[in-house]
Amino acid sequence: MDTWKKLSSSYLYQSPFGNLRKDKCELPNGQIIEDYYVNEYDDWVNAIVLTKEQQIVLVSQYRYSAQNIFLEIPAGKPEGGESYQEAILREVQEETGYSTDREPILLGQFYVNPATQTNKVFTYLLLDAYHTSGQQLDPTEFIDVHIYNWNEMGSLIVNGEIQQLFTAHAYYMALSYLKEKPIR
Image (cartoon, rainbow, N blue to C red):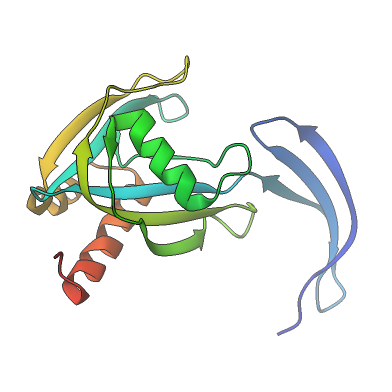
């Protein structure tokens, strides 16, 4: 399959949160798209966090764009040149106060929306997590921590209590991983 050719590119908006770029593209058949908009965002990380007692650590927070409170897995983006593994361990500790002595297990990395966005989400599984401290939230973060039994997670998704795609996706990836490699 032939790819598209970028003929020109310009930024309509740039910010620390993300950029909006307008490209002029030529399709394989010669057709020109004058205005193809691309959202440039940073990659982010998220994690299924399981305790030694087979409980999952979730967070709830208000999401302004959707105008609702969402039950989710901990997530964030790398800061200051840290690796994805370092970022997820830091984010989990800051948002929930939980840590682990085990190495994070990468379940997968996926483009969020490759049609219009440049970023990926890196999803991890953290095992044997334990509570080490209080939350260390940014001034704009208001996050509540929730602990559920792992075997309740599927029902939370099916019943609509979890409505965030990346949380549901991470759960099913972790479930598949744990069927292949049971927790020791």
